[in-house]
Image 1 (cartoon, one colour):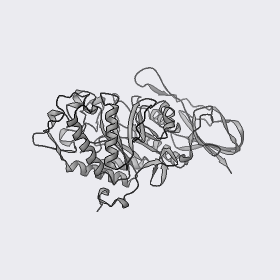
Image 2: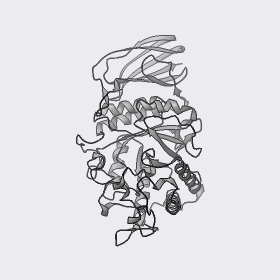
Image 3: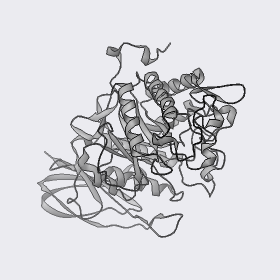
Image 4: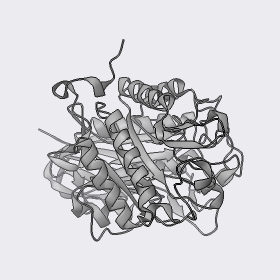
Length: 457
């Protein structure tokens, strides 16, 4: 029988995922430097009681992925929200697990905890922990409209505690209602205590707070409450912006700065000097082609990012193995083939010793490079680009070609190994003497190509 980690003496608790002390742009997890890479479901794996999370986590692990993102159960969508078919964040009322007890009249008592929710959350974390999967626990999200606000426990119509009176969907995460905030703080403290013993999680304050009202002051308050309740044991993430933004006044309690739709990955360079992990934890609105999201993953991580999470709509109730084919109106893609491609990317980076690497903007005339100067370089180029129009805004050229890369690295003898990111296979190699500058010709390839350049001694 498994003992919940929060019941174990503190000395026996495993060290949770952390920023790597030698290079805080990456993570240290179970004694190894790593990045977090996944293509995961739409955040309802715990709150949706019908979702088979064991099959889901087994699928991620089988495909070589090590991350997933969940919402906590204090938010729910309705079928059809954002044109998502089989939306895991839109369970039927009877299948929606929340942290609070639901009374016979359908309302919530915010002073009573729901044992079924906390049991499922810890069982999920335990299963993910067993498989080496790190979980982002996103506390809450912006309420995009009154439809979503009308569903949540904080709305006065849905609780017996007189909480949320007179508020609109833009008001809750602003500190303007002390009574509401007191219940929210109590929930966060309860959450921190329940999951304290797990090593495979970090917290995110709020999903897309830049829409619909959440203030920076409220986000800082939540980070402070989390740190105090958790004792600083787990990392805290902040979702900064869609696309890009240079962070002017970073919260010292935050260790991961996450962006959505960060293509091209300018957000990494803009914030690299913060010496924190930079992530891209949501993708979409670029069509269904696997190449689009594979390219975005490689481009972001070779730019120096630490985390990539593709929002994968092939996971639904009944298709927890990720085999559902989303219809045309869905705002993104996802497939078994894409997950295998991302699994290769994760293994490629993990075995390369990334903790000693940093962006190397002057190494290659084509694409971008990550490397340890004079020792090892990982370079990547692709034929995807943003284009006019709404869907897809991002398109990929599929013509086969060769190209010439002007490479500048310190003198020495090097081995060049070319990889096909789509198949994970080696497609060429050679050894040469480098005297600062040299032109390398790629093998024939389509869509994208990766170069592993190692100095031989």
